[in-house]
Length: 391
Ligand code: SAH
Image (cartoon, rainbow, N blue to C red):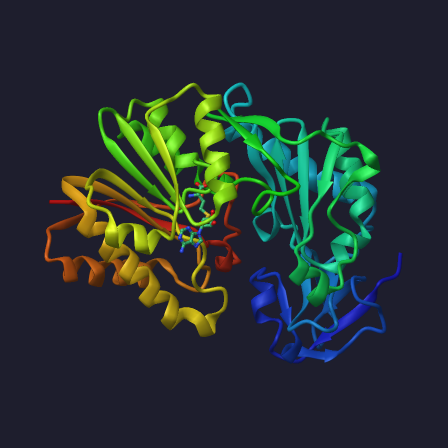
């Protein structure tokens, strides 16, 4: 098969030779005559083949490579099936399906498949398509998922993607293979009701699985405050391992409702769900806690927002450190891609310094095995956290 070509400006092939999967518009010498979403060859100024990617003429990232090769290849149904099957085999090493059937199957660039994430909830696969190119080959993706035993596939498209990338298909069950909501699924044998249609993200914040478990293991006999709790993931893990009391706080009433339902589903009683702004709650609450979780949404959605976001993280961490009992623990996170590990640590440092308490870093936290980081694409490392001990 013949593919149209993107030719790079001389010298602009360097990051691609290092397998960084993005071609920026400024590095392009010659555009292909191809519509948005086409699969194109990426070539150096000397016409050497670097690989294949999805073309997006109107985007700053003009092409996202899914294959690096100097030899031409055929990109057909089998190609996509192999890619998805390899991702599935990789997960099998880390995910024990008897305990956990909530996991991310495709983590975009982390699985050498830019433009899509696929999350698994028991028998359902939720696809979030991020670029037009993936939409155009989505039939192959669905067939590959079917061949792995996932016959209920939900397509979920963000409005921003519809506008920016012209991804038009979304928010429907593929082939009308509808599953009634909610889906019952489990994480380390904790049951969750997950509504993939109405829930945030694809229905659940899968990326905190290992951190939730770690919190659980430290929760026996403790009181826990879980801020930005969404459907109660951290709360449930604390309860399962014997926390004496857990408060979950989220500004979304629906989220608190979900958390309350999940607590009941697992048969726990010692929990209260509070619909409130977490900053206000922390300022006003008279209680102190043995363990506090701070897991806010991304405050910095783009690089211009970093300064404001840093102030937000700082005041949140200060409030958390003030409210934890002497000898207590704080799990603090940032999922902002634009705030890296070092900056986050500096922010938490200055929050701690304002509180004038002894604070130690017990552990550095990250994203789990099913959200792998492509070593050539450091942007994929987005979740960072610290476990703090506060005297
Ligand atoms: N820790 C959660 C995921 C948190 S996602 C988990 O493990 O599943 C972030 C959550 O913060 C969302 O549920 C959102 O509704 C909530 N939120 C956003 N801004 C908030 C605010 N100012 N106060 C309270 N909750 C907020």
